[in-house]
Length: 516
Image (cartoon, rainbow, N blue to C red; front, side, top):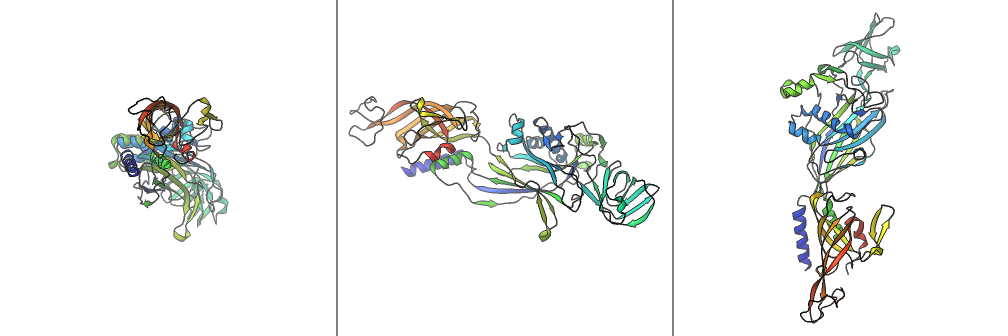
């Protein structure tokens, strides 16, 4: 009998969750950096975005990288459905010999799976079994640097030799100049620039050309949008005037994001294991996939890989005010936990230094909805059998033991989020057997509706009872009691009305004790 029960159980697992019984990880790394304008969507003063603008932000950044990764319209739409953002505002850099500090940062998860409120965006670290998503980090006020090689000044025009991609009108700041120290801290506006030097107006006595060192500090074209934000539409500039950013910031640190997608046992199978006091699967295999996107510039791609409609969009660009990076992810495992570690890095090998942007990895639960789950219906005889829990605003049985409990299979259509604390969308059927050494002596068929953790169920229970006489079908004399031992008349099933609470496994399994 026990072997039959386990075979039947294995069949349920294999049918309902065939892909959820092993664990693996997928790793993706991003360190790309591209200039972008987000001031009309992002509150750059406190590094935040609201629900109304999150979808547009997701679409804008996906469009920027979509042309280079050769995504078609359908693929871009798939990745627009789910986005994870890390928005970071850096404090002003005053000393390029130290890592630029973080002023404010926020993580967000956006999904168009259903109406996504501001509370969802900020707190709901959840995707619903997504196999395509996009991850983007956005750096506001991040400073970059160009190394000074030579300095000259004539007729109040300063000429600095430095490899750069500056645009006319761009603001820069000089720092750490060793010889021409009168330039330190000076804020200048680029008058003209080549790839190896630039000029700026600067009122000062002439200064002969001299070898020098130091940093030209700059931000992506334009400064962060001032509060209140989101701000106005961007100023339009020619796309070919957008600068190419250096590999690292002025502090010599570059952004590094590692995304681990770790497969896990599905929630409904975990509920089943909890009922059976069985342990889940623990061994995991590690695989790594390198990022497929080499995004050096979103706006200077060769015409050969751009569709005409995209090329037209990119002829005039918004004047950037921030830096973004990241890309699209085809999620290999579902359900999974998506863990994102953020850091700034410099150096290599034994000389590498790592500074965490957020000290804790950001973890997103990526688990879909299911047609099947498992629960513990508990029969109640009267209202006094129920108590109200003030701490979490729920109802629970006063006395829970194996004599009034069932092990049940719940069916849902459409598929339901079995991890939710909200009400089930529609009433649903359930079928169960008694939590007992002889489970088939009590069989329950019912319907349930209510919040997932504590639904009201109403149905019928077939209870096996001893016959009162040979061949008798009467249930009255047995008074509803179960047959503890066989008798000479045999036994039969008696149908009884059953009402009670259908409880989630996680909240009740540890209170059941041993089957009686």
